Amino acid sequence: MKLTVRDLAVSYPPPADFALEDVSLSVEAGRMVAVLGPNGSGKTTLVRALLGLVPIRSGAIELDGRPIDTWKPAERARRIGVLPQREETAVGWRVHEIVMFGRYATLSPFAAPAGADHAIVEEAMRRCDVTDLRSRKVDTLSGGEWQRVRLARALAQEPDILLLDEPGTALDLRHEMEIFELLRTLVDEGLAALVITHHVNLAARLADELVIVSKGRVARRGSPADVMEAVALSDVFDWPVTVEHLADGAPQLIPERRRGRELPLETKPDYLPE
Amino acid sequence: MIVLGLVVVTVVAVLIGVGVGAVSFSPGSVVAALLDPNHPNAAIIRQIRLPRVVLAWVVGGGLGVCGASLQALVRNPLAEPYLLGISGGAGLGAVLGIALGWASFAVPAAAFVGALAAIGLVYRLAAVSGQRLDPRVLVLAGVVVGAFCSAVMTGILTLTGEARLRDAFLWLLGGFSAASWPTVGLFAAYAAGPLAALWYVARPLDLLTLGDEPAQALGIPVERTKRIAYVAASLLAAASVAVAGLIGFVGLVTPHALRNLIGPAHRRLLPAVFVASGSFLVLADALARTVVRPTELPVGVMTAAVGVPIFALLLRRMIR
Image (cartoon, rainbow over all chains, first blue to last red; front, side, top):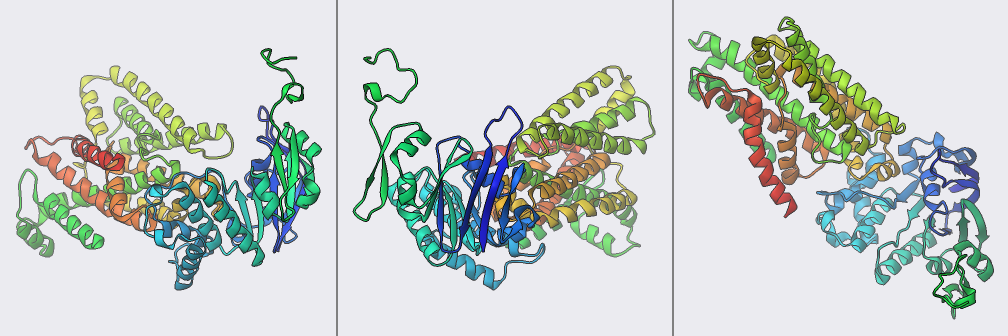
């Protein structure tokens, strides 16, 4: 099971100017690939393209060698579990119902969920530590709990590939670490994961491969040790950064403080000294 | 429990609906007349009261299911035929027919055509923003088309003679006084299709409440589901308006009440809403016939009078 993006180009009609050009990446079983980049670099467009929500101008997205748009939505949902960034507050639903949504793609139109579906839902809730919340209404959950419920829903799809758009957003340190650690465990167990995230340092510690997207193009791609390079990242993020290493060797990005002449802004405010 | 409750409510509503009116019958004689075709009251109960009650029940059910589906489709708890311009189009069609002095059997057809035209216009307006049925655009387009229809309607009414003006107003406020078994048959045969279609997309509708992107990710064909739901709900509303005039609040009150009771899953919600909305409209019609006997109030007055306080209660519970 492999998801491949080859020379992908996506463009929106004007006035929208965010688009993708020449984007290539791939993710396979047992690998976690993190897509990083500043705001507006095209990360979300990439997710939407992977979901078949925006038309592809050129290039290809292939799942197991077959173009993604030839997969029926239900067929695709059995292979790729998605944690979208945007989601309405689902008023009135209970946690176990939301997780059962992960099984809908496998149910025939008039069939009720079977015993096997319930077992899968229970297991997914256990993995994400939300079993105790099963009868809670989801509009009463905290941000961290809701994120774990949504991850459980993606797992209930029994996918081969997880596609996560900003899974750690709005989570505190512990909950963000819990989500990423769980992801790493799932990947080590054989899942493939494509994670879109702002969290460069967490990605550098946990992912097998980093893909840095800038202005709709892949700026750098490779292992964290290869990609995390101060000059290139300063350019991508438009801010001076240095790269240091943790005791375990993981590279970490440290943004510099703004200081007089090193000011990265093109025009300096006039209250600053020359 | 819920099923039992709904059955009890329906039986009570039907007994009351058939029993009350210009001449009142006890529940006992209603049952007796229903069982025995030679019962002295059989003619009035079987040929006048019962078709009226059954029509109110199926129309109410249709309006309720329509409201519940539209609310999921546009992710807006206020959605109902009024908000999406369907009622406005139907009203305009009917008023036009009445003003032009068409025969009374042609007025429902005119309402139906008006509703379809409004649906088409709203759909076109929403599609202008792109290929997709964006809920926000759908609501905006619905409000615009509805407002346009009522403006034209007001213009037509202003130019209409007094006798026809009264007819038009009575029609707009809705009612079942013209109910007959053929009307019931026609409506039921027609409504079966849209109801079946909505039942078919009931589970995808669950996912649509999360938003397009999550629904797509979870494997439902989002655009197809929306199109089926929108067309089916609209056709259902158009047919309801055509046989019974404009009746508000039915599609608003019962879906909200039932979501609180049995949750938002549409496989359970839609059938429950159908039964509860049907009973609600039967009772509203019974009230309309009796509060100022022998004058019969338009049933739309009763659904509004009952609907607004219930809605206020629901709103308070929901916000709290």
